[in-house]
Image (cartoon, rainbow, N blue to C red; front, top):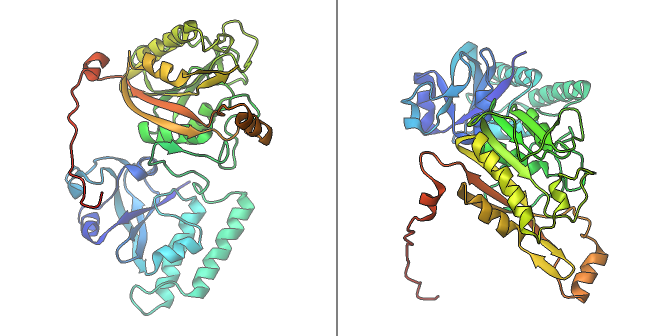
Length: 407
């Protein structure tokens, strides 16, 4: 069953699309382009003229630099195209797409692609004006058919429930999951926010890559990866569901250099009882160096199975227990950079913890302590061809700028 995809161009890039018979995109639409198959319906949205042209047919699978000289490499994720019988162009395309709940650079169901094709044909047939927008009657007719088909199938547009990619180091999510399908179990103690996994795998992996979660908990990593067409293996010392494999994270049963990304949401100490296993890291206090020694064994295993240049994401929080603060996040980071190259640190807002109540906020003010407001997401990478020590010994030269007259 064919899909559909709207790809963007500008006045400056449009000519190459037709001359080279190829559509292209940057990394923001990478996954969508790579999922295109021969025969899928394609449309071209010129963002400068606000026009939509189609219908084209994918002549190849989506790939990387299929026509290397196109756009000087600026849009490397490409699909070769061929026009179908007759091309049609309509104006005010962005407004029409918004009216139909269809977005560019997002995969379309077969019936959505067919509806868009019908819109172009009908608009061209009933309007004598070149590049005219669809008439209200045409738009209403197509919209009615789309709503009926979506209702009959019990679906919305294929990707409309997916979150946006984050562009800063502060991530704040109002809920644990997104979309219509569950991702993990939001009743599970310490469940991982699905948005975190979505952002990591979209940035650092490709469709078909292998993602491993050695402490899989309720299976959030598995659910997100499957929806985003990544291969995934989830382990846990006490599995909570059949597709999680029983295993100790200190010994990952995979070959060296075989994994494209590792994600770990480890215990932050012994403040939560995750299971009854005596081997659980959650039985060791974060005030004890043994806690970090044991987790470092997991880091060593993650380093071993990761391919060079691939990424580990480690989610961790600090601890305040019995009037004592333990900087768990800093201590984990210190162990990580003994093995990996640091990439970045994300602050993830904590919204769903049990202490986020009026009673606990009142206690924090009365007894002069702070509730934990965020977690760390440490993003590190297995180096390529050099050791982490060489990275850590670099000399950093800072650029200096003169202050303005009013500063």
